[in-house]
Image (cartoon, rainbow over all chains, first blue to last red; front, side):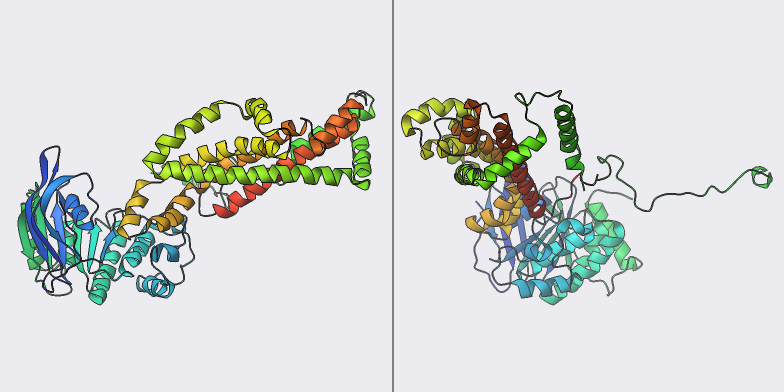
Length: 240
Length: 280
């Protein structure tokens, strides 16, 4: 069973030991070990069905009725960004940001300003574009000052240009707030641009791990970028 | 080679004239100003013509102007106001109790499996029995006084409130439940922030049915041994063959029904302004 303890050691934000998750006797996560340092940005790559969402849901405490074992230590303060912005359509933008928080309107406003949506506090979510909705979702996560930010393909539903802008924004926000981040994605370039370390998951096991030590700003024109990308694609079983 | 462009008399450039604001192709069309009034006004005109030409016997149906003068007389001697007040009090008491009962039952049954197991069955059975069929039993239990009247209205009101609120509640996307868990909402906050607003469209739809049902039950209970109310006024008029007073009562019931439905729709528009629908 997963154990969520608030106890957080200084060296580790996330500590996973021997995590196994099974659906119908098929192991989706197979004796997996993973640790993430405070403030570290880890991207998790994998094909569909590789278990990456299962791992994220296990860390978020959203895996019910799942058979499994292993040890799991995550901080008490975890925020999740989903693929859809998941804003309550009946609550205005600011109320969505501070959902569940008390006397947090001022912090909510600051958080909205941080994601470039100052002045939209009283808009309805349906009045915003897809990119703006996802920025509200980011503000909702960051206003809680999480020690761990879990993001499940947060930019998957956005168009390519908006996605690039969101990458810049997310890097800026992470630099300012310093949460540990686990970003699940299937976009290799996105993982290289954003992460400190990229992990490739296949059939519930980590099959590759690459620290990213590229010069800033990271550019696909960098030969190191191309080499990294081809190694990661290789690990994903895509041969070019 | 395009010879066409050089030929005289043939336009190569067709100016496109389009209204700036286009209507949704699959929408119901443009809003008609005062559209809701057109039907009733046509009906009134037909009635007036029928009475003026003598085609409508006043013993069968009084003329519109007779109804107006009778209304004036009834107001002048205060009968209309006092009967209206009594009827409105009954309707609102029953409506209020029914709304409360329906909402609480819908929450109990929607938020817990045990609640659903215990409550949903009996309410579905109650739903299959017309409220007015319970009248003989209610008269035996409660007599013919106010409590029987209000109970009958309440029993008619709570069912649509329950059905639609429960349905709206169960239709709330499970993704929002997941969100509520990740942001750590307490059960009460979850009900207040997610469940109630999520079930509101269903509740308001139920409210429209409930209001109609409240007036319907009112008509029936007021004609059973009442000594006050619009229904009593009409029953009395029947014994003296005063069709004009009966019509006044009917118009009153109609006006009350329309007014209250309009009020609910206004609430609906205000409360659900976050929704974008086909009619927008």
